[in-house]
Image (cartoon, rainbow, N blue to C red; front, side):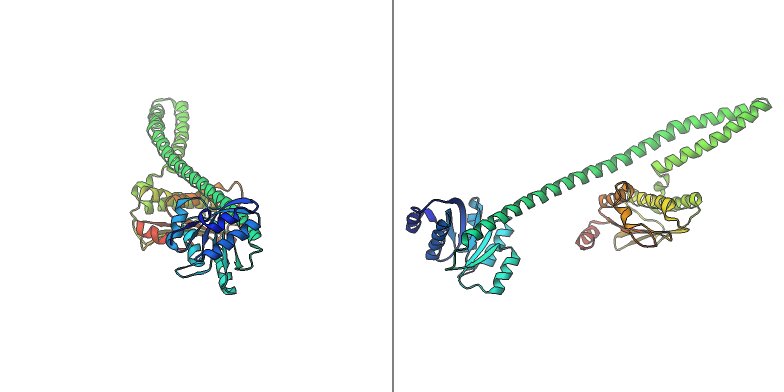
Length: 383
């Protein structure tokens, strides 16, 4: 049956002589013409002026939803070829967050409760429509609140997406700038320091005793400067990454252990791991920042890095025997290092878990190495 516009029916014209009320665009799912007209008459008595159409099946409902804007939907529960449950499912699947009221003569309590849980705003019994007006106004108010909430959530999601895009761009820009600075330090400063070493060596060989002593002191200072430059270059762009992520982590661990005195061990189930530049940088920076935090805050005597590649997934766990990470430390306004690690992991399509509130500090990084592994990771609810 085609949708029936209320303005074309004789009963609607008769009802039009009643007191005008609040205009409302109403979509009614109902197979009985008589019940439809009684519904409209009841609404007019309760200070509404409905502009309504009636549909009886899924096709009619979908066509009506596509044709125009509606303020609310009122649906019978049982129809010969349709039901309120199916109607509500279609409306929600179409993305329409319309107020939805069930008006039926034979809906049981269990079915009514199920309908409310599924998203219906209210239900009424045919022949007892005195509450229809207040129920409709309440449903419209709730629908407006839902739409505002949905719009706010969409705006928040868009804002978060823009923030993540900016964060990704900043990380990439920082790494590119670090690499450029490291090259300039190597080419310019390194070259000048090398030339200075030759000059001081010549002076040490050809000067008198006093000059040779000062030249020797200058060479010692120069050696310290060269070591500082090399350390800065390693921090900016670890040259060990050219040999692979395993070699880079081995070098990082050895340098950390020598600098802090904390016994640190790296265990890996592969001698070498072939990963992209982005994954290598992410793994290295997570390990570097984690070890820095261990050295500064953990009071640990032992630390351990476990690097594992299995089932197209890379995992890195960093643990220590120190005081652990307090839960409140994760929420401190200035804890950008920990937040940065999380963003780095996300940028590489992975995730980072920080075990807070425990005696043993632990950070777990997981990164998929293939699109198939990334799909599996996305499907895991806890990821």
